[in-house]
Image 1 (cartoon, rainbow, N blue to C red):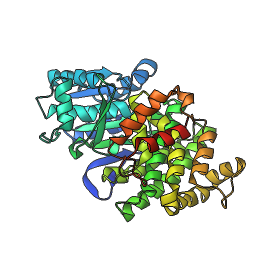
Image 2: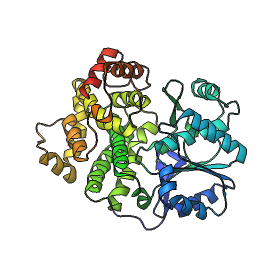
Image 3: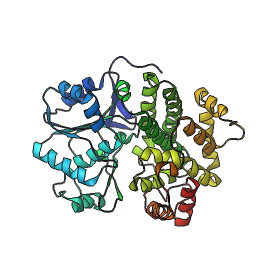
Amino acid sequence: MSQPSAEITEPAYAWRQNTGFVSYGLPFNELAKKHAARLGARRILLIVSGTLARTTKEVEKLENSLDGLVVAKRVGMKPHSDGQDILDVLDQARKCKADMLLTLGGGSITDAAKYIVLALANPFVKDLDSLLALTTGEQRSPATLPLICIPTTLSAGEYNGGSGWKDPRDQKKRLLWDTSMTPQVVILDPALARLSPEDVWISSGIRSVDHSVELLCRIIEPDADVDESAKKGLTLLPEGLLRLKKDPDDDEARLATMLGARFSMDGLAKKVRVGGSHAIGHALGGLGVPHGYTSCIMSPAVMRYNKTVNADRQALCTKILWGNEVVASVLEARGLKPSTSDLADCLDAMFRELGVPRTLKEVGFEGDEKVKTVAADTLVDFYAPSNPRPLVDAAEVEKIVRMAL
């Protein structure tokens, strides 16, 4: 695919025409200025990556382009969207009377910003208890403050109304779905994304591969349009990631991965449920394992566990991977054959080629107690029952986790 040389702004998904636009083709700061004006912003709160703020001029470039509209700025957020961080920025937004939030950074910053725009519409949120009440209660006002996101990873949470925060009191991840949290605009800029560390870009890209794989491998909630988008994601992402591994300056490949991540999120944005890799990944995230790495490690193991009930769906994914010349050449070089390799084999080979962790031990996760904690936390995850083999028994979850040790 070739890179555009003019602005392209369109609905991220055909079924959602009034919000959730994706915009690319011009530098991120120019697009941010255009969209802030279109949305009538006068008092913008920036939430930006600490790394970008400390080591680059990109945040300064963004502020300069916004022509004095920035009234406050938060630099850096803890991983997994720490609840206290959310409360601190919520207080900042209230005090500066922000009329728009604009993020520049990764998935933790995006998730935090979603919660902040929702909390701004609910004045009772003032501490961790009330933040939890916002998450678990049924009575809440919808978010109304515009949110623009400029992502620097491929986790793709910018395209939906789901979010989560880590409760610092017990390290549990609290999840919520509220479509009003969906960002109004997502701005993509492959030149900016070059600044993202390679391991972050690749591992978050694998997270989006996991979105596509689990959507295609589901055996509930049939939706042909979701399947088509997931196929596009599984076509664009693996090839793009493998090309970037060889040439990090390949902006065409980088944009392909960004658009692939967009397509991978279509089903999740529609609230179509995924499965065990995501459920176990949420539990591992609560213990500090980065979400990108959870997919690198758990996706093949979950596919092996599920194969007895969805082999035909997994074969569809395998066919897509073998049908791509770039991916097929890697699989062949690693000793696989189309006639004998299954989806778990293909994912394992591709992930190893990309140089990401493939075992929990590699990310410092060891010990029976941790395995039992992950199993218990997985059972209460939203996606545990929707796994093709529903995860309802802690011993079965432990079996999957031990496959990845």
